[in-house]
Image (tube, rainbow, N blue to C red; front, side):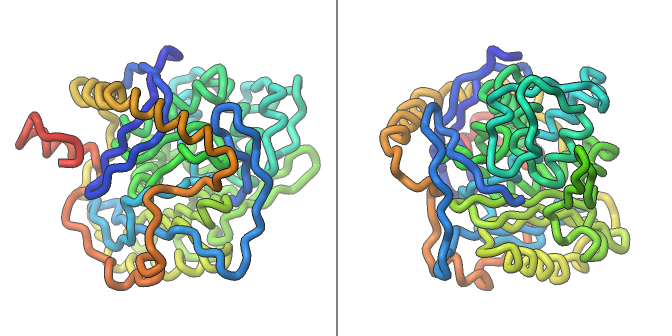
Length: 388
């Protein structure tokens, strides 16, 4: 499992995004806010940048009807963005997978390394040489968005955070998240760590479909750890009717991010906001998206559950990763030369695109699950190119 290749040529609906990755091979089984450090090879962590009144990170959002699979609304949903601590949703997906298989238990003690203990700035204050239970690590991620706990989970499963990030990226491919690349388990800033609003909505649906019991941890309002009460960063929990999770995120480059799941009147939507200008602005936008779109959602389950790629689809995904490997290494090397560059997503939208969202909101016609879309494409043209 550790001899894996994780590298990426990200295929989007209308835009190709080149990203850096590392080689990995993996057999795919079929059936916050936290400011963070740059995690780019051996590059040191940049100092935190405090944004001013003109702060305007690149924006994107999406609302998906989980029962029909239709996109009810979207703004730049397939444009490259930084996930920040939304990364931890995938970290927990892989942990829930191990719990589901019985490889780990909620009371399993996880060893804390020096690397994990030094993760900052949002953390539980874990000490090297000690242990933390799986359940406390989960709660630390969903409430405080603890970077040290994320590193502990990564090392327990992957042996190292770098190897775990390869597994994260390949799991993203297996789920159909073709535009997401992970290089760390926490969301600490890294130029290569990118995603899209569409991919995050897909993951937000998949994790609760696959692990409905463990998913409930995302609704944890607070938990007590070593005498300290730790409150969930998600301010919509308990404040907006039907919200049951799931995760916040923030870095200077990403802006204020949020994935929300809402169940109301037999309807279920998953919504994503990326690039809010503040906690309050992001939460207000999410509230608006929920209220404007939930009435349009279906009360009947017609969309199939999200499934992971297997067989020929998995082999093709790995072949695409291999084909992009040389280009990714070259791009990675060039990125390392720019040590003083501020990490930003590519492509970055214009100010007009960021501000004028009313003209680009659309109602989706096709299935949200890219795995299903990909299989439909293969039925009509087995040799269709990426992005067809």
